[in-house]
Length: 195
Picture 1 (cartoon, rainbow, N blue to C red):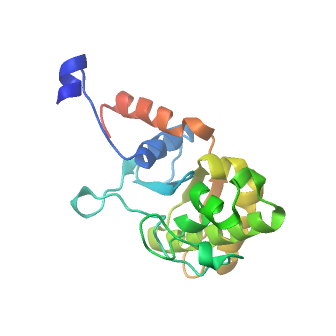
Picture 2: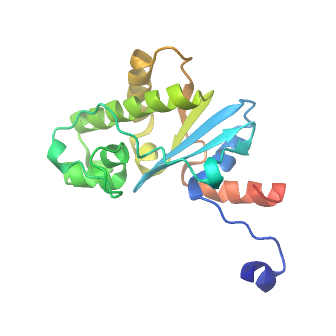
């Protein structure tokens, strides 16, 4: 590989949310078996760890958790449009790009009613993810999540708790590392000698 030849060391490439998940998991010194990290930024993505190892789907594919359909609330449903081309993805409702498209302004300028819609939609997505993946812990990071803070997380957590059936409710919290999750994940990969 060119990078290994140039610098004379091992080189690894992975999806940013997988790397961020490793960083957040290590920072939490988590003993949980199933750990889901979600980033809400310009888009929405996630990394899922089982026993500290990145979950990889068929053929090594990365699960695209932002591209699930939900029963959503939106004051401007005609503006909901995902960049993947599907009409009803969660990412189109709660990511930074989706928020700008729907509300005509960045997330940091949302009013209380608009934040409530975003939190409701996030909670519905968390319900799906909790039902399918059964994580012990869900951690949210990225600019939208960090900007929304505990107000966003608490409201989404309430929607999750009210609507989740059949499986245990996972713990849900905000990132401990803020904007540095992927950096810490890269350090963790280097420390472990690969993901």
